[in-house]
Image (cartoon, rainbow, N blue to C red; front, side):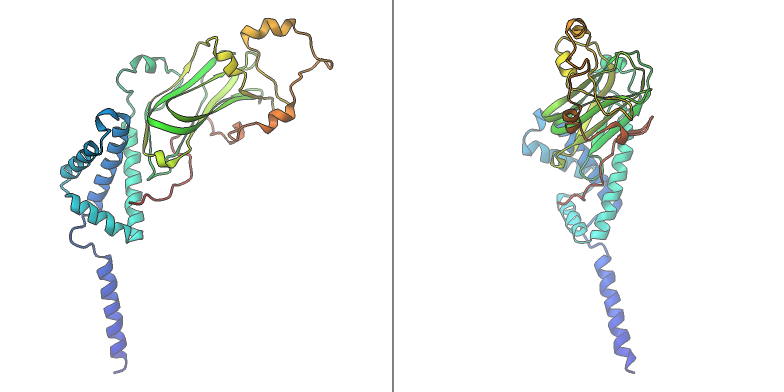
Length: 320
């Protein structure tokens, strides 16, 4: 007889736990919540890209309400759903994992170039990947990496460019590995531009083995974010580019503990006419250059043939 109260208490506890896990009235199904949250993420990025007509809170709220309406959900149901999932972290985690996968699936659908950029895309013979990608704070997509092995003439100038849906802080690295083990790379930081463009001049005495690039969003608060019109081209150098090229890093093959600058055509004559230093060698201090070398060195770059839109660590979950 003593076991009866204990069993009764256990059954009551199980009933209470089951009641806590049951979805209450006014909270939509998980599948519908995934549909709505995915659409809202994409809509937010779209409105950021076309800011003019969506600059007011009223216009943005109207888009949100339209998405809810199209999914058969009221604003009250949406808020109740977010509140409930926010208090059930296991389900919350599972929900946003599904949103992440849905966004990944949608990303693959956006592989066509943006209108008005057909000419640019025709020139992008070195870029074999989709011309658009999407970064979201619901996912690990705070970075993008690529690696290709094109056939390039010596001394080619490469340009990696894209357009962002809104200004964002970015760190961009473009580099090449040569067949003899040497490397060249340029690292740039962007503090508030929508147009990203990085150029690199390859060595006129070496054969390129592969080209790689790394782009990272520095402030996750700027997400979600679209990048479109992504291209990698052979670019003709302009007179203003030569001072730009002089800042790129050039690393000799492993075992060599110094750096050297790539000869720039317009400076070649001056270099030949200038007298060598007292030791007959390069006067550049290799130790100073080594101290300023960027973090994204070729050894940590992606392997050949890789394209990784999400190269950052898994982000923290989005909260309301």
